[in-house]
Amino acid sequence: MQFSYKAVTKEGRTISGTTEAASRSAVLQLLHKQDLKPVLVEADKHHRKSDGGPFKFGRKKKVKLVDLVIFTRQLSTMISAGVPLARSLASLQSDAGNPYMREVLAGVAKEVEGGVALGDAFAKYPNVFSEVYVNMVRAGEEGGILDDILQRLAKQVEQDASIRKKIKSAMMYPIVILGVTVIAFFGIMLFIVPKLGGILLSLGGPNAKLPVYTQVLLNFSNFCAKPTILGHLPIPIINKLPNLILLLILGVVATIFLMRYVRTEPGKYKLHALLLRIPVVKIVILKVAIARFSRTFASLMGSGVSVLDALEVTGAALGNKVIEKELKEAAEDVKNGKPLSEPISHSKHFPPIVAQMLMVGEETGQIDTVLTKIADFYEEEVSVLIDGLAAIIEPIMIIFLGAGVGLIAASVMGPIANLSKNIGQ
Image (cartoon, rainbow, N blue to C red; front, side):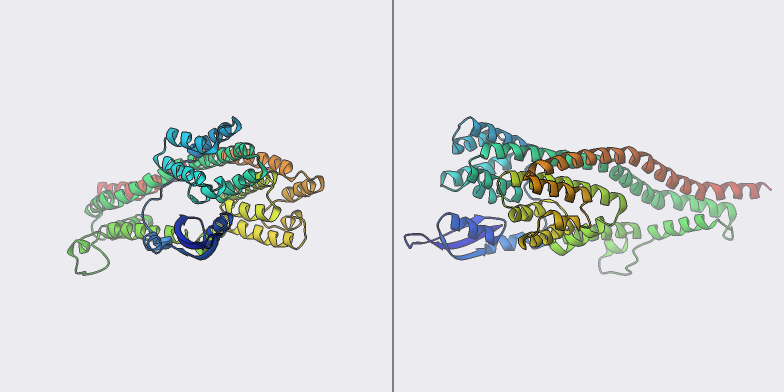
């Protein structure tokens, strides 16, 4: 998001400008780090107008996770070799294959050359560098271990990319099969069943008794083929549309607005709560969330970030608002002096093993090491679970597809055979 600001320098001069940041508080933090006293910070009006809120249309510029992994590893290697940061960024900018990544790195390099910390420069591009990424880089800069932190980040981003790739691969087959099945079903309803219905009526006459499932199929087919149910509208082309086309258009419009709604905070929370009630989906989401929590929290703690800051950042990185809310409540308990393992042990979503391992980590002072082991375990669990689901989804979809084809065939061919016998007699 773009913000306009006015601030006062140490010398008493008033300066103004614009910057990109995730929130107003991020802009304030950035100004304070530059020894500037904020006077006014507000979202850019032109940006707000073009943004359109949660119902905006248009494609966002993105950087693939694989590009981010390559950049992170290369930057870590160059910093370890003693190459100056500004020179490293300039070199990586020219080598970047993604045009938007080159644009982002040019902006980051310009900020760094102007004296801005690397983490603060990354924070201006929240659609590329997540809050977790930015906070870990800041911790690395403060601790003088930026190269080590970047190596950890590269591994973490790589793990996230691997999990996402597996989930997408597992979902691709059923989505394609489902799409083809729906298109084929409505195509049959619109073009084939009406002709077969005419054959049935010509064989049996208007008083022919058809099975219930055949009659339902014919009625639905007739409804799909009839002109629009909206009646006489002032737009002739819409009046000529069959009900099927109209229903498909309305379905697409409703889907678009539903997708826009689930991008809002209330919409996300309701969707995430619903997903946690679906049996198989719930298991996958929880295992992914626990793996991500463990690795992210371990990385932040290992980088020297405080427990409260690590909880806040980790919650935003889980991808589920319900579990994020639970972590915020746990952070309040930690703020009141309780160890993190205690609220986690009362969690509805975290299994007991996580609380027990956290307790061990708190007692031994090795929370990051313990949570890294939990992350490895659950990432392996996710991998096995997704592979198992991918193996059983294919036969299940084939069974459902075969059942649908069999029902349509029985609805049409059964009555034709019976009527043929009656004619023969």
